[in-house]
Image (tube, rainbow, N blue to C red; front, side, top):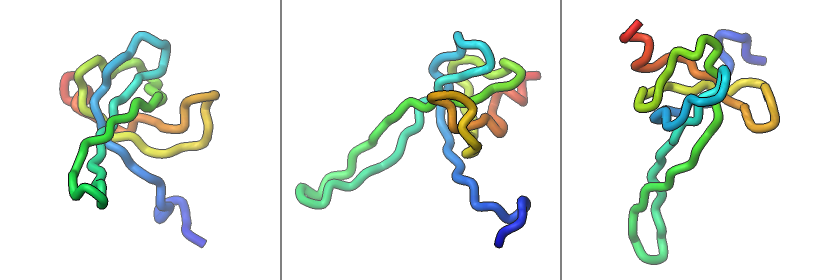
Length: 88
């Protein structure tokens, strides 16, 4: 059984698109998907709500998200760090 240091939590990177909610940011996460039938590579974007405890990230910041326990109906991610840290 893995310890807390060795836990395999998923990480995502994305761009903050909205920070109007209290302690929550909306992050646009982009990934590449291959369509095998037509042999085409496309970019798929989804928006994820993430927990931002100090309200320090603004729209346009690049952030790294870490999977966490459910914090609310929609929030399953927490902001680990991002470009907003360098500004402060």
